[in-house]
Image 1 (cartoon, rainbow, N blue to C red):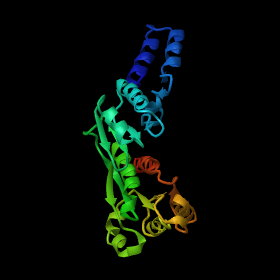
Image 2 (tube, helix red, strand yellow; image 1 turned 90 degrees about the vertical axis):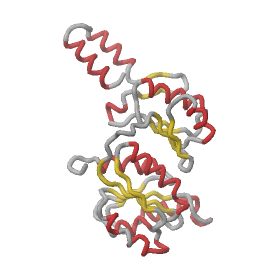
Image 3 (cartoon, rainbow, N blue to C red; image 1 turned 60 degrees about the vertical axis):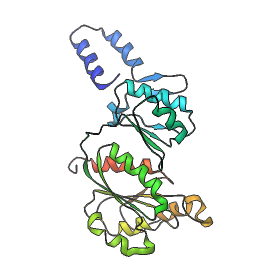
Image 4 (cartoon, helix red, strand yellow; image 1 turned 180 degrees about the vertical axis):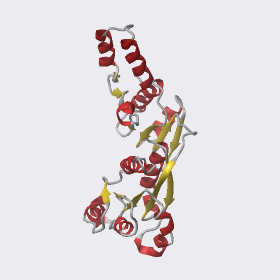
Length: 252
């Protein structure tokens, strides 16, 4: 049941066309659809403003198709499917209107190309190797209706590259700083801007990087103020919370 159907249900109760008992029965069944292998949350967009996002890793192509079809049938647009393999994307693309991005392994179903984009999110990466995580964040934020500017390969090993883009950073409402290795980029960015900074550690690095753990700990221990940290390689999480910040009342 989508928002329109919910409003129609409330109208039916008010006009006496539907008893409270019958309405309760509809509401009990409405918030989700049980597909057997997944319970699809149909009311998430009403509660949170954004519909359910499908995590593709660990699911079969058929399961992903079933979940996405259920969401699409309820009228959902900009359905995000993260960690979507190329093989699963090929199957999904045969059944729906899929926009697939291979590098971040992210799919968008029923893309609303006419959606108005607001605010300013800047995504800065330490190196080209971090681009997959950056693109997951960027595409997520764009699908949620945000203007996104990409600053790639501006890591601290060549600090002049970042400083040359200071005018771009200063115009952001939120910055997503993505880095592997020692994870120093968010600390530098945090010392340059007045807006919130979301730090994303990546698993890029040599042995002592421990699959991103070193970058994660460095970001958690940053001496710069105004920095929040998401999990290793979690571009989606960064893009989502950046969208929330960017759209806060009085900012967007």
